Amino acid sequence: MFTGQQSAVRFFRTGQRMSQQAGGLNRWLLIAPGLSLVLFGLAILLWPELLAYMVAGLFIAVGFSVTGWGWRLSRRQRNAAAGWQVVDEY
Picture 1 (tube, rainbow, N blue to C red):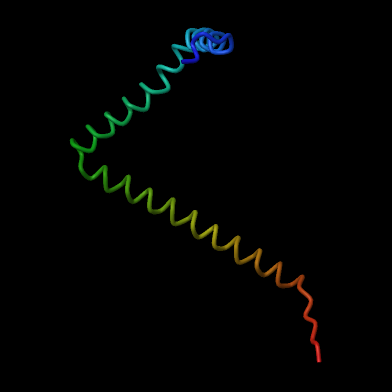
Picture 2: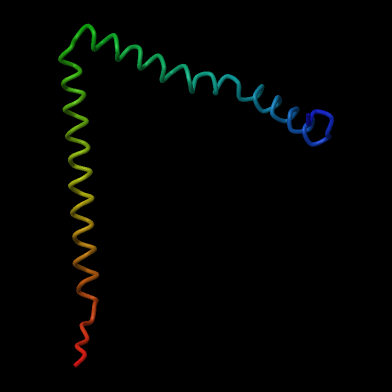
């Protein structure tokens, strides 16, 4: 549909050149996480208690994050409340 237009041809050639230059890096950005996930899966099959340690570590990290988030939120609310002025209208 748009192949006869000059902008589409120019964009396609630029995309080809960019993918050829960064081809090695793009490949490893997908291969490395895939291989590490396969290795984690095999390790969990061999040592099932490893999964328990990974899940426990995740729960601890998320727990610290949520606790810190709540603590910062309460501090900000206290600081905001200290700056408010109460005006009584009679």
